[in-house]
Length: 420
Image (cartoon, rainbow, N blue to C red; front, side, top):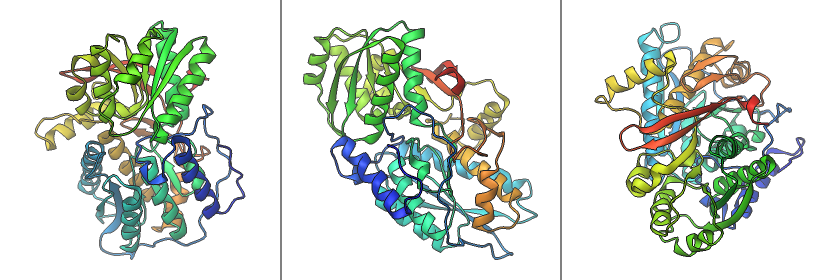
C-alpha cells in the first residue's frame, strides 16, 4: 500500500491497520502476526517519516536508567515472547556487568502483551508512564503498530524485535526494527524453491485471518512467477483451524511439486501432517512464522521436508553467534534458544544500549537521533545499519531446514542484493 507522507499520524494508522485487516477479511484485532505484510515485494525506502512533536521522557540524572520491553509472555505467541524476554535480560545483565552507563545501571521493565494488540498498547503506555526512555517490542507487527501509535503521541522511540510488516515503519520516525521485512523473505523463499530445489509448479496455502500470511503469500507468488514458475493453486484457511482435508484434496488435484505455507507454526504443523496423510508427500516452504519447536511436535516427520526463512541460526560459525550461544546456555541449563526471537530480543536491547551511549543526552528525543544514526552494529542476527534506512535495516536472510535433534539446520544465506 502506497501512503502519502504528509498524512497525520492518526490518519496514517487508521489507514494501515484496518487495511491490513481488510486483506484478510477480519477485524484488525486478529492481527497478532509475527511478521505481517503488505503485498509489495519492494524494499522499503528511506523517505522522510513523520517525527513526534512530543518531547518524550528524560532521565532523572541519578539512580537507574529505565528502558521498557513489551513481550508476548502469554497467549499464542508465548514461544517467541519467552525467548525474547530471556535474550533481552541477557543483554541488560552483560551491559551492567561491564559498568553500565558511566557507572549507572540500566533497568529493564517488562510488560506482557498477552499476544494481543490492545494489551500491547496498554503495556507500552504503562512503561512510558513509568519513565521508560525507549520501549522495545514487539515480535508481532499488529501489536507493534498499536505500540508505535501510542509511543508517537508521547515522543518515545520504539525498537521492534521481529515485526516484519513492510509498511510498519511508515507510522513514524521514532520506530525502528532489528529484523528484515516481508518484502524480502517472500522472494527469498521463491528464489530458493525455484533455483536451489528446482521447483516449477507450487501451490499455496494462506491463513486469510492473518495479514502476515496474506502478504507473505503475495510476495512469494509475485517473485516465483517472475522467475518463471507457476502457482497452480491457492487455498485458504483460518487461524485455529485444525482440519484441512478439503484444501489439500483440491491442491492434490493440481499436481504441484511443492507447497508454500505462509502461516504460523500453530497451523503449519498439522497441515504438513495431514498433507502427507493425503498423499501430498512433497517439499514444503514457509516464512519466519514457522519458527518454533512446537512445529516439530505437531508436524512430525512430515514437517522435516520443510524449509523456511529465518533471521538467525544457532549453528552459525560467526563469533557473535558463538558468544551468544555460550552465554545463553550458561544461564539456561545448557539449552539452546528455541526460536530466533532470543537472538533478536538480545540484539534489540544491545542496539538500544549502544544508542544510549551515543546519545547527546539521556532523553527520548536524543535517543531517536542516536538510533537513526546507527551504522554497522554487529548484532547476533547480523550487521544492522539504520542510518538513511527509514527504520528498516537491510539484512541478510537465512533459509533453514528442520531436524528433530537440532531443530533448525542452516541451508543458504541471501543478501538483499541477491534478490531483486
